Every structure is written in C-alpha cells, then in structure tokens.
Image (cartoon, rainbow, N blue to C red; front, side, top):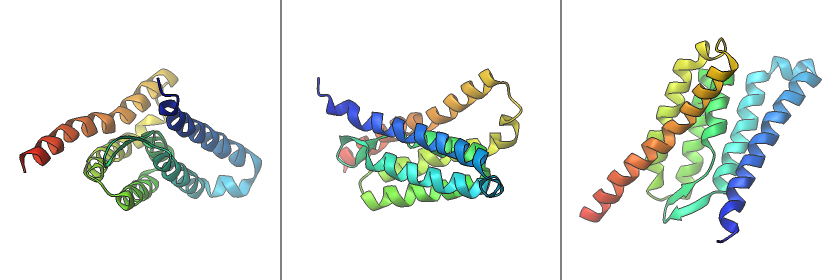
Length: 161
C-alpha cells in the first residue's frame, strides 16, 4: 500500500493538534490573548483550514479529502456565530480558488455543518464531557455525509450531460 496516502491526513491532524495547543498556551500566557480570544480563534483556525485543504488527499479530479471540518466546527463552537461565518467564508473562498466540482459539496456540506454548530453554540458549553465528544463528532460528520450524498448526485448529473 502506498505510504503517501497517509501522509496528508497525518499532516492535517498534526496541524489541528498544534493549533489547539497554541490557543490554549496563548490564552494562559497573557491577558492580551484572553481579551482577543475570538480573533485568536479565527486567525488560528483560518490558517489551519487553509493548510488542511492545501495538504489534502485527491480522491478524483476536483474532489479532495481533508480534515478541515474539525477546525471549522470547533472554531464555530468556541468562537461563536461570527467566527463561524468567517471561517466558513475562508473555507469556501480558498476551496473556490482550487476549482473543480468539489466546491458545490463544500458550500453545502460545510454550510450545514457551520449552521448546526451555530445552533448548538450556547448549549454545547453546558454539556458533560462525553456529550461534548459525541456532539463534536456528530457535527464533524455532517459534511462528509452531505458530501457523499451530493457527490453521488453531481457525478450522476455530470454523466447524464
């Protein structure tokens, strides 16, 4: 089996872990970062989303797979609706610059994911750890499910032309 298949997802995972640790470290370090917490979340997760897309695995022409859903969801949950909208815009604009049919699934899947995260934003923080884990996992699975379903629709639509 080709070892390069695992290389890009591992880079994605490493970027996500480093970004989370950076946010925790900086907010504990100085009052400045605590006061600008939402800006810090937006900037950090924007960079991580772009890098996750950059180090993606190509499944077919115009269709890529990466872990951008994780920083998108958790940036929205911990940053709030405005941060979520900003992260969604960064995701769509960067994915748009790459071209391909995958942009439609990005708009649908990530849009539904951010909307669900915004709706759960206030109640998420009062959940127990196990319920947070289940909720976070569920939220990050919304986009792949929509991507799979819409990918089938778009591929059958493209073949019928």
